[in-house]
Image 1: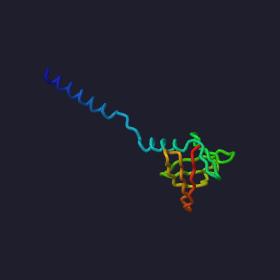
Image 2: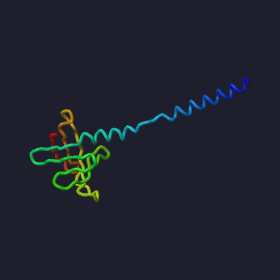
Image 3: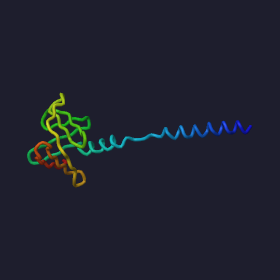
Image 4: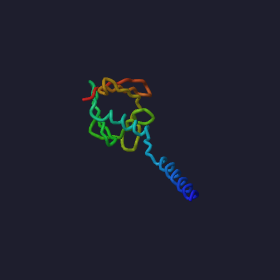
Length: 116
């Protein structure tokens, strides 16, 4: 009888330990990237340039939709769907995410946008 309780006790213990490992663990880097991408969505403008970012991973600055992405903490804008890089930018949001500052990595040129 004691042997049965011991076997049942060990089984229940192993079951509890096994189920504890089944909790869902979220990948915070993916969630953080999605949050950053959401900040870009919408239309941004300054005196000489208007750019609109869409949730499908495209942007427009003229009539053509081209791809964009956040990679390694940088904004990558592509010139066409062949993924030829148009620009690599450091970015910073300010004023409750209504102001976007883009700094071109290759030359340091800074462009500031306001969200429409």
